[in-house]
Length: 502
Image 1 (cartoon, rainbow, N blue to C red):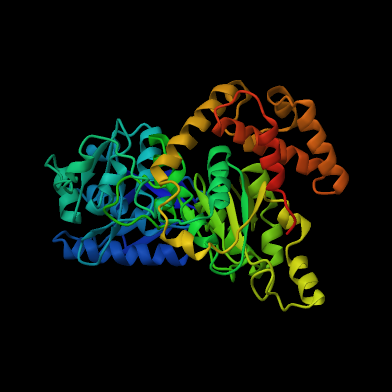
Image 2: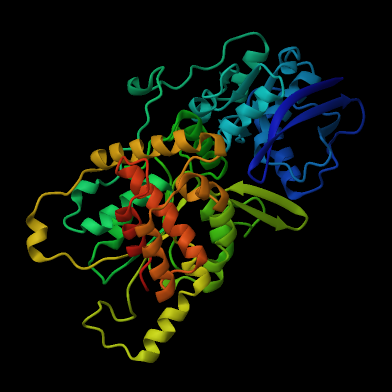
């Protein structure tokens, strides 16, 4: 007797459609999974055996042969349990097999027959739909996430007995109740973080933050302890444009596969903000530390990667950021496995001006300062389009009102982004930071005064050829924030002021 079921198997950060075939025939009792002699296969066998018996079904005392296709699947995870158990029940004629033809099953089984949720339900649902299946059966904890995929029936099975009931033509268990605020609508959140209105003083820092948000520029904040570097950086997501629904689905899929999405969460609306500790390794930053793992650069996609105490990070790790920052993608090769992930984030970093703290009160020797600056090599500083120097706010500033709230700043940023998208639509990019030299020449025309300012900066050694390109990209963003079609002298001057010495 033979039966077949469809399932989804996670490999690295992707889902693959797979088929579980079960053959039950007379012979000495045996339970063999063909071609997968790893630890995961042994665990699957024991979970499925116990769940079937404890759910009131008979485990066949016959020769059971199981094949999982395609054959190049590296290992079996717990997400195949439900499909394997249902296929075995169908092969032993304890449940009908017809519905298995059009349904994917995705879930881990507890020994008592309860169905557990598995990471990656959204990716599983997308893969099932793309494979031409009509439905997906899974545990209740991840159903709202899977229900984001259109044209796919979502069936809830709290226990193996529930799955058997569905296969027999009955109804699934009820879906978890959706909160009223999200019922039938897409509600971008994006406002749950700290607000820019909490900042007092730091007009220059806020201006640099808005330029970073408007043009997608990377920003380095330099200032003494207490100047507000970290406070400013943590408010960048609150002034970025809200995620579109497609972007939110993309971020939700990634976080679900990475195991970060909590059960019951449906659709993430906040842009990612990742702030790894300076003790992080290169593998932790880029990924590849263990099979299928991703680094902080991938988890920050569509959001912000914040590196506090930049000078304390491992220099090799910082220099390895070159590809993710420049190309917007990272490629990881491990033991014959190649994975490529998007890394479209804004890089923000903060550092003190010297080892002991503020300028003007510095007790560091020249040797100490030279050693400190060497830790921020030219390759590391090359990641940043802007370098903003912050000072501690004066006491009187702390009792003044806010310069700008996040809502006000976001409104200006969105208008600037709209201008960029309209101008760059035919170029295949959306923000000024992505402009190459050819695109820059087509969209930035300088006056004689602006050309003179740039020439003087090059003569002083303030900027090199690459620096001029970054200055013009930032100047174009400053003009967009100001509502100007042309790049003005004041825009170039502002961009040059944000290329100061470390």
